[in-house]
Length: 417
Image (tube, rainbow, N blue to C red):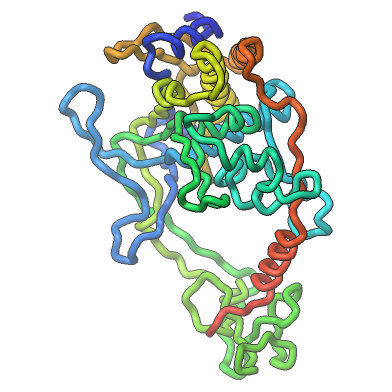
């Protein structure tokens, strides 16, 4: 099977192809029948389980099977962004990645930088809004104002500074226009589902080698006023509530009485069965990824010809192809006890308007990097280029102060009895 080429991608975006599709079959790393753990969601205590389980039709037949969501559209988008970030950090993929540099924040945070590929709302995120570019609040700079004014009818500046926001979608709800801020449709959609799902149970227990049990009411422990100490047996050193009373330790995950050793993670945990988040067994899993050329073709680049617009949207599509290839290379370790193995390499279908595939091709990291480079050069030759200089912001003092105050409160505020 041949590798996808830049020429094929360009013709697909410019021609009668509606989308690019990748369908990747996966199995649990432990083998068929091994249990995996889907993402769990907040539900009532009376719910049967915490997973997204539903009936889905399989293929073109009338067969219906029980499926479980293993990774949502939003989660898959985040993983694809991190895959692109991996390629960018390795120097294999070149595209604009604006970031906020926290390296000189005097300990306000525990990370060095936050990129547009990690911020929840991408370049429209409040983190960028509340940071400085060359000493000016980002939204007041030329770049920031260009982002505020960008629309699907004039996406040139967003392409120039943050093309991944065009690929994964962006709603500028935190900017000066609030809820009326521009919306860019998600063109990259992916999810992973498991088939023939059977919800199981898991067990838990703990034996305390110190054999610490309950203590008398007069001997109960308290949350310490010094967060580093965690707890204290002296009420004079305890954190106080709003009425000036010492607060019994109450941070433990168990449902025992405040002030008991179990609240500071000492003591045995009685063996229990968890039926709400006990994992699932599946026959197989399927990752379905679609890059919508139809969505990308609706983007307009004011002042440029249709040929130039096609060149730009092809470059954005090439980022999506790279995301597929690099995510595959980063493996599918979705969460604890949910490692999946693909049964084949990525196979891409270019879907025509009549729904038929226009040939199946493969793609790997090297090929996707070559396609992206060619697409960028092609767009540049057409007059549309993206920023090559690093777009580095630093957090505004007020943002650092907010982070510090929030962390201080979270660390010191005792939980109520």
